[in-house]
Image (tube, rainbow, N blue to C red; front, top):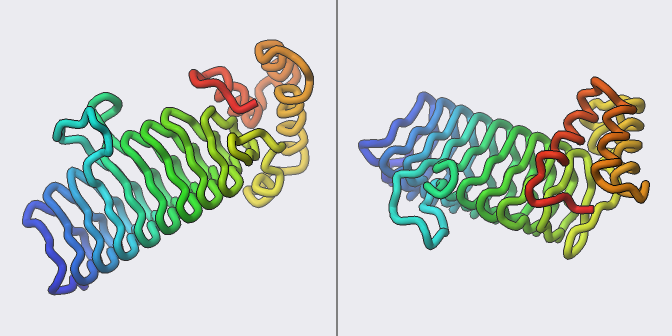
Length: 256
């Protein structure tokens, strides 16, 4: 299942039942897990670890050196989990020593054509990046976040779980969990109620999240006051804790 026209380094480790297409190049210190599928004309550079049952379509560049002027050839890494899909022309860069030294992508992510994931990004699980969306360096994308087509995320921003970022959004601040944003620059547009329904959230859970959102965005309260009200009203509610803890941990500040 490895095309004779592929070029594979003797220092690469290829798992069982891996398919590698014509003219793909697998470099030194690359590890590809069992059952993965690599299309034609794909270049994978190391050090890069790719888990099981990933699909990487034609013309992708995975694990190349970071696009950072401070980078000086250090042996930084890219780590990719299981069952991710990368469509055509995606680019994913390794980390830098100025940060964690590793770019990390979790499991079950859907990365559509022409997307870019820059150095030191952290992608969670079951995220969607639609065509031509791009993450600058040091961005965090939490579980089940969705980026529409052509979304741009500024460096050091965090996108919370279950967010929906509409097509063409330009994001320069943190987006709390559950929130929908759109625009250039992106502004809050409510909660991602439809996405929450599809993820199995009950009407009661969605109602609580909506009420917490209203306190942050519509109550004409200082952020600290709104967070205190939310915590008092919804003690021990994990959904609300995810929302409030993200906001409190934000160094960059949230879109508001």
